Length: 567
Image (tube, rainbow, N blue to C red; front, side, top):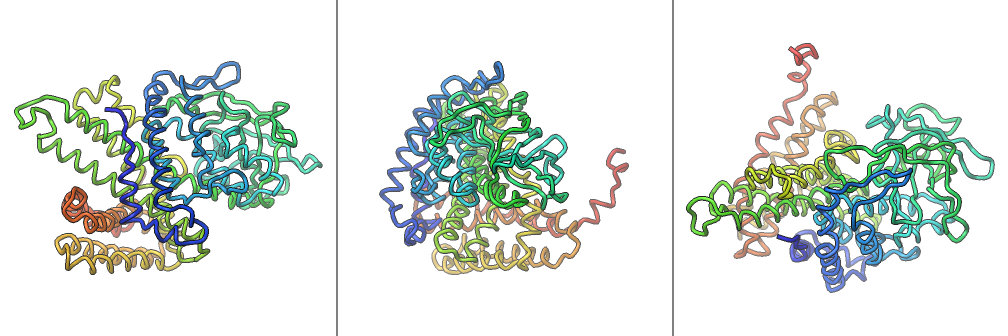
């Protein structure tokens, strides 16, 4: 079964669950009317179905390769990039002053998710450029913006993010790449970076690297880090690429999946770079890009889940096995369970991701601190649950295929291999969970409490129409509130961190129940109400065990010594 862009699902969510109307009621996004958004989703969906989806298997079977210092991309990727660029899909949320569309991030997130479902390996490239665009818009000088943003938004240039070094992974403050002033406003950047997604390609005029490095007077740790824009080719005043910069691709990583996406080891040998933002302010600038990427990576997980689900559903409707009414395995209860769970979790994760994007849009449009806090709270949940859903749904998709799922020719295993890294990059899911219970609770839990108030109010209002669904959602929310208060009360951070992953998943489960309830109210006699009933009855109750684990503390973990674990 070819990929089918779920345009109607996005339209339903925007109308009935996420509230695109409040976004378009702002001056900033007034032009994003329902008709405009529908046309955008339809056109992007068509590109994903017709251009990107056919590149899914070729990228896996014929990976990117390094040839004489140049990355040669998989068959058809150049044409795929051209379609993405010419459609304007890279600069969707970028400023119109530099060639962007100025659309809400919620709409951009929907398009990114469709591209992820169609061909994740290629979608990583425009996602990196989008993050760089946002970072430059927020922190770069006017000269850098005018030179680079139009090129990035048009797809003539592509962007990357260079944080990690061999000795500095999640501990970014341990990086050693250095930047020496050249005396003319530029800097000589020297060092090695690893895990650089799309560090090079053969279809863009130039590759723009955002590189974290230390100035000579930098203090140790993250406070001594600055951010530099280091292009592959030094552009002239019109942005035309000129002389090659002093940087190179050392090697490509051999990975479990995402074979079509070149992951590079980058070497900088006095490469010319320009400061982005303030000296020693690199982390603030880079976090702008990373938060954009975290939302995007959560969407990648949801997109792969959608692709894996469609793949498994098509197989289940065609595979003849046993005596069933249809003659196919879709009538077996266990297969129906797997497919229904996949579908229900895709809906929940997609709703969380779009609600996160909508909060970002409202924060930008209104400059309201409460919306900014809501966006910050939802970011680690959306990233972690979106990618967990991608992994679980892709794994279940293999199971639906049975033995054939273990055979590469079916393509089921590729979804599982490709999505696995999303739980690792842009901040591991464990780090997302710790961020949720630590930094995001520095307000005493106020942002979380505000969201829980809304969910409970909504459930109360729904009791008269759907008491069998509204009641469990209210009860789960109240239990989550108690667990949140417990988290905030813990002065020992290890007590929070020990249960952080379980707490985050419980939060996501409750959010999923809330959004499924909203869908059921909007479609009371339709398939979305039936799907909501399954989610709320079968999946939402997981919160009970998760919250018990979340509040268990760290004593049991640290009672076991390292020697005990190896015994």
